[in-house]
Length: 495
Image (cartoon, rainbow, N blue to C red):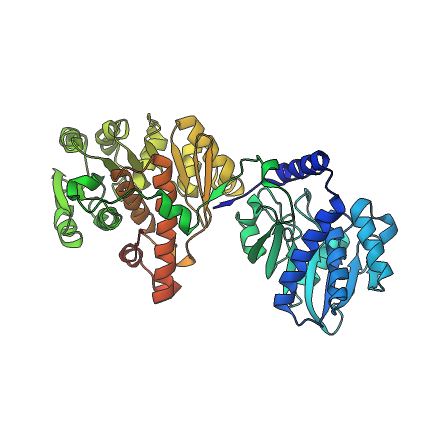
C-alpha cells in the first residue's frame, strides 16, 4: 500500500529522526542524491552531459549533490544556481561548495535566463521542493518555462518545482517531469491534479529514515495485494444466498440503461442475487439487458412515485445492500419513495439523481451509506461551487463525510474516499472512463461488494480500485475514444 505524507508531517518527522538519533542530515541528503542519480542513469547515457537546475534551499542541495555524484560516475554536469554557493545555507551550502571544488561548470542565474546549452541529454529539476508555498515568478518562472520547452527527459527532485506538495496545485507554473524521485513516502500532491500529471513516473526512494520514527497518518492508496487482501472469502461450499442480495432502485423512462448498467455491475462484482425495482416502461429493457437479475415493477408511470414507497419497503426485506439513484429522475414525489430506503439500516450506495434530491431536500444518512458524487454533485451537497471542490477535493470529501456521518467517495481522475478518520485515494482508471454510465457501473460494483459483507469504506475503496482497472482494460482493448460504460462493466474482474 502506498501511504502518502503531507510536506509538513514529513518535515517534522525528519527533524525528529535527526534530533532523536543524531543521524547526520548531510547523509540523508547524500542518500537522496544517490536515488536521483540512479534514476538519471536509466534515462541518459552514463557519460552524458546533464543540466542540474538548483535552487537555494535543501532541494537545491540535493541537486548539487546529485551533480557531484554524476560527475564522479563519469558523467558531465552543467549547473544553474539561483544563489551562489556562499549564499546557500546548511547542508545545501556544503554540497554547493563541494560541487564547486569538483570543478563543475556552474552558472549563477540572476536575471535573464540563458538557453539550454547544446549537447544536454537531460535535466535535473532541483529548484524547489515540497515546501514551496507561493507562485513562481521572475527568474525561477523563466527557468521552468525553459525546462518545459526543452523536449528533454526531466528528473524532478522530490516534487516538480512549482507544485504544492500538499494539494497538487500548480503555483503559477509547474515543471513537467518525465520522472519524479521522492523520498521516504509519496506526498499528497503527487496524486492530486495537476500535480499527478506533472509528476510523470513516480519513484519512491528510501533515504534511511527508520520506520519507527514515522507515525504520520497520511492518505492510503490501494495496490493489487492490498485490494486482494480486503476481498471477502468465497467458500466453495456456498450458494447464491451466501453472497447477498442487492436491491437496485434505478432507472426511469429514457434512462433505463442506467438501471441495466448498475444491475449488471452488481452481479459482475460477486453478489449472489440482484433485484431491480423499476417502472413498467423500464421493465422490458431491464429484462433484456440484465437477464440474470430479477425485476420488480413498483410504478406503472414513467418514474418511481410516492405511491411506490410501500412496494419498495417490501422489497427491502432480506436485502443485504441497496443501490439507489442511477437514472431515477428528479421528480419531487420520487424523493418521497426513496427516503425510507436512504434512512434504512441496510448498507447502501446513493448516487446520481438520488444525490441531487438529497442535496435539495436534505435527509439523514449514516455510517452504513456510501455517497458517490462527482464534483458537480458534491458542490450541491456542500452548498458551494464546483471549482471550490476541484481546488480542495480531500477537504471537501472529509467535510461532507463528517457532516453526514457517512462514507463519501468523490469521483475524479484521482478519487478521494473519506469516512471518519479514514482517508484514501484511488489512482486506477483512464480517460476512457469519462463516458456516460461509468458512474452507474461503480454504484453497482460497490453495492455488490457490500452485499458480500465488505465494510462500508472497504467496499468503496475496492469498488473504485476495480472499476478503474476495468476502465484501463477497456481502454487497452478498444482505445480510449471507443469505450462505453457497458465495455467497462464487461471487463470487471474482482479477484
